[in-house]
Length: 418
Image 1 (cartoon, rainbow, N blue to C red):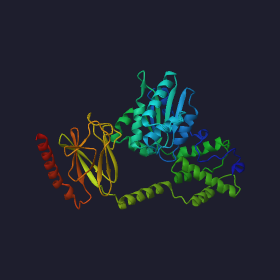
Image 2: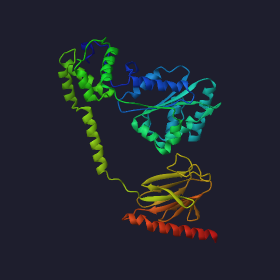
Image 3: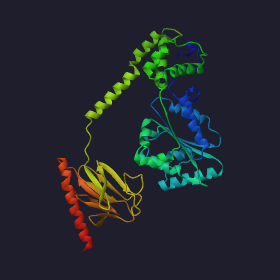
């Protein structure tokens, strides 16, 4: 490497997050302060977002390295998990081996652990990195964990960190209950032009530069132009520039050397890169062929249409709680009441051992292949099934279906009267 040539103790621009290199910009300092509040507040719940490469993980690592001894940490960074896998990952971080347990056992073990540690005066902190990959069902599990109490005080502190998509997920109406539990939300944006210059000098000094000039002053503006102030991109460009300088045995990176690095990376200015990415996304959206739904459910409450749900190929779970694909909020509906599995040929309805059962066209069924016009009764709710596989036009799914639906309801009501 080039360390000896530049008189440094270590490489200053490695991409691996390193807490000692954390740059204390106003926004990074604020983000860290928000995370520190989770330790102080009994109901601490912080959401931290930022674009790729903006320093979220470095701030997290710095915060974690300074946690007091009375904090027990569960740090989960693999997030493409099912609810059971997430609970297992969390328990592994807490020192358990929960691989042969069912969900009820996992939740009981975790709750008992949280309450016992609380009684001992310990604090449990859950930190989830790359949280934008969490499914809605896992986020619902986190909401339920956040509600566990002992002596009227929350026993779990939570930090979710991820890309901007995490914020979009939390703004979804279906996750409103979770969002209401969040105490603080903060977004880390790119560095300013002046902050980019200070960031470069900060990392060089940490590596042993002692304020020696390693980058000419005229290079900083160009670095900002091509990196957009994204710390990870700054690191890549500065590291490449220092490598280019070392091949010329120069201990200073000048503008000419920086231009050589930019050419080697084949970069264009950051603003142009963003425009190209947006144009590419627009083109993808324009030509993307979306798979049409194979069927559809019209959802009624007391015979009044309140919504609908398209059925593409796959499985849809229907039940009372928010972790279902279709939530039917009724006391007579089980937590997970039924499922509908749809493929190119059929939609198969199956009762998931519900308490009050599933009725299709007034008859209780365990498994039933749905036909166009079938009415599924779930308490005071009705699901009117519409098969779209053979629909040639919007007219096929419009007025004719509603006429059939009204006739079907009338027939069922007549049957019940008889």
